Amino acid sequence: MPKNKKRNTPHRGGSGGGGSGAAVAATAATAGGQHRHVQPFSDEDASIETMSHGSGYSDPSSVAEDGPEVLDEEGTQEDLEYKLKGLIDLTLDKSAKTRQAALEGVKNALASKMLYEFVLERRMTLTDSVERCLRKGKSDEQRAAAALASVLCIQLGPGIESEEILKTLGPILKKIICDGTASVQARQTCATCFGVCCFIATDDITELYSTLECLETVFTKSYLKDKDTNGICSTPNTVLHISSLLAWTLLLTICPISEVKKKLEVHFHKLPSLLSCDDVNMRIAAGESLALLFELARGMESDFFYEDMESLTQMLRTLATDGNKHRAKVDKRKQRSVFRDVLRAVEERDFPTETVKFGPERMYIDSWVKKHTYDTFKEVLGSGMQYHLQSNEFLRNVFELGPPVTLDAATLKTMKISRFERHLYNSAAFKARTKARSKCRDKRADVGEFF
Image (cartoon, rainbow, N blue to C red; front, side, top):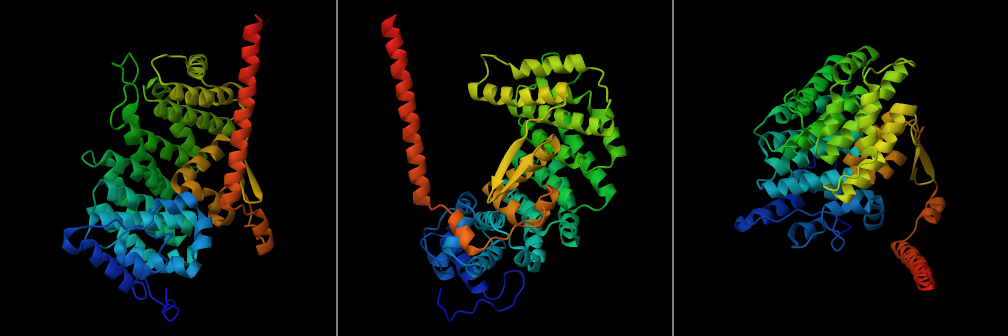
């Protein structure tokens, strides 16, 4: 990027300084009827002109995989914002592939780094782009738009700005979720987005209840019917029902006690039927939701009594020790691990504390509510979750971490491990494991020969 290029000209919505580069990129993408994938944050090219004309860019997903370390090393905040302005312009491109790639690029960058001021200044433009892509886009574009909407609300946190985003996008998300002709994958992502945005932004109790009802109408379709005696068979919509159930459970954690009691009365005796589904992810989602419901119920009434406890614990114990040879080993291993914890939660009111490390800090996950909240935001942010736990005030408030910890440059440098050092460490660990296994095999061989 030439030094005499002006980047600090005030403008809104990604127009102005980044407009020319974005326009060139859009022209290059559509010329001759050929569309190129927009892949920002290239390892080779630092300038927006090169990004506009070059044929090979790095994968947008690489930003989420490498995390903030790459952004810090390969470009300043100014460089990053300049590239993002061009990408925001490309969300209005005529090519669906270009729009989708631009949405994914913006989402990956915002998931990997806190850019509150940048997002705040351009929230209207970003919201308009997301709204347009949700309304007129197809499956993949709708998924990318919904994912970006979730990250926008996470960046902004609770407040009038997020409320405006939810007010604008909420009706569209609800329409897509309930539209049986829409792509299942798009509806699935929209369900997660609707739950996350409502969790962050809603200040209207009626809107919260309306969102809960919308999600209920979706996942309750998986409940066991009276005529079903052999369990629940999965359908193409099962992934949608899982996402809707998890989003519903997230929102239940912020409901008033009176509403929680109503929901428990309706769903406590129906939710266990999902444990008989032949989809392992549905069984796990239902089990974890049940554990969370028990935790909420016992939080309201310490002597809470569940009528069908014996039947439920027997079902949970079966799943915790499942050895069905018709199921994949990976699925059985994952299921047994989860349901051992669920069984302990239901029978003994116990939760196995987990520790999450990020930078110099640690967070202890000591409840099902906290675990479910953490898992939901980690699904949205991916590898950027650790960075946001360090610097995102909203998430730090959710998990009661206090204000962000400020570290000086010297401390940060001592904490940082280079990729080469990380590679050496992993190689040494691999060699040590291989050597230990070889010794163990040798001992077994010697015992066999002795007998």
